[in-house]
Length: 254
Image (tube, rainbow, N blue to C red):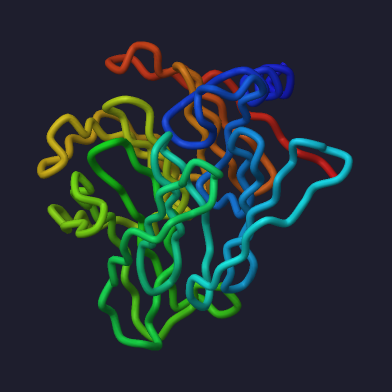
């Protein structure tokens, strides 16, 4: 049942972060997305470059733009106005011109040591951007560093040319992140999902948590939440924020 619900949600729903509302076949994505379709354009990340393809003719996509961003870019997020590129060294913001070509607005450095650059997905609404920064000392992890940094950063993006860090919240290996209205959903690598009320972004209020399991990424949409773990999907109903309910756990088998 969960797969049917997930497919329907991914095909039909909209939320603050993947496709613009003018597109007829809206598709939601997790916060680690490296490829997004926005209208007739496909945006995708290479190792250090943001590429744009025109997919008006789906059988013959045309490359129309390619621009260097920085090394080790990791994620794409779109909030109906701006494109956010998450990298290990900072948050990059682009506007889209009339042709859908990204126009650089700003880069906000995370200001860590050069060899402690964290992994970092981003979610944003019109006024604020939220970035989870995480490292680990666990051997073999892509986020392995010699020191641990695990926090949520909140940025005022009312002026996208000069984002301002207005809040930092310590967390436990935060990973995937999602936003829907005044709710922020954050995965903690081995400690489940946390839900925050972001009405006041300078003083976040945690309103729900479900801990003790692996949580890597999250997709919220219109009261239905999917949390991706290790070979499983957790599904929640958050229509009533005072009574968030776990609906199911689906094991993914090879």
